[in-house]
Length: 193
Image (cartoon, rainbow, N blue to C red; front, side, top):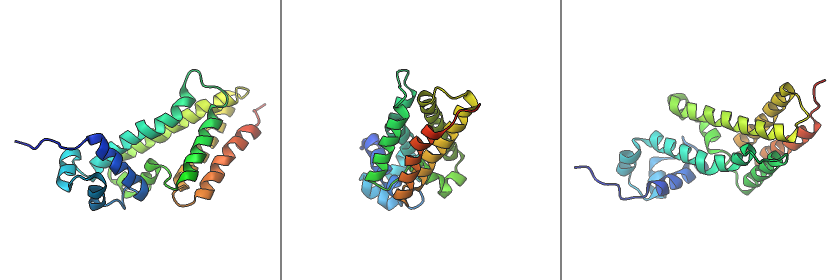
C-alpha cells in the first residue's frame, strides 16, 4: 500500500517556485528544493514524478498566481485606455524590487526547454498570452490606429516587455529602460496614412 501525502501540495509548489525563480531551473538542485520545501526527495519524486514535473507544477501555478493576475486587467471588458500604462508601472515596480525577472523566461534559457517539449510549449503559450494581453492594452490606449498599425505597435511593446523580463535577472537597469520605452513608444507611434 502506498504512502499518503503528508504535505500541502500548494505550499510545496510555492516554496519550489521561490527556488526556481531565484536560481533558474538548471541551477536549482534537488537538495535545495528539499530544504526549501521541507519535503524529502523521494516524496517530491513520488508527488511530482521528477524535477521537471515539479517545475511544470510550479510553472502552472506561476501563470495563475503571478502572470494572469497582472495581465487580466488588460483583458477585462471594462479596461480603459490607461490599462497598459498601469501594467507597465506595476512591472517596473516588481523589477525594481528584485532582480528575479520572469520565472518562465528564465527557464526558456535553460536546457529544460530543449529537453522537454511540454515545458517549451508552456513557455510559448505564455509569451503568446502575454502578447495578446499587451495587444489588448495597446488597442485601448491607441484607438486611433489602424488594425495593421496597432498590430505592429503591439509587437514592439510586447517585445520591450519580454526583453525587460528576460534581462531583469542580470541587468535591472536595462530591464527598466525597456519598460520605460513602452509608454514613449506608445505615445510616439504614428498611425499609418
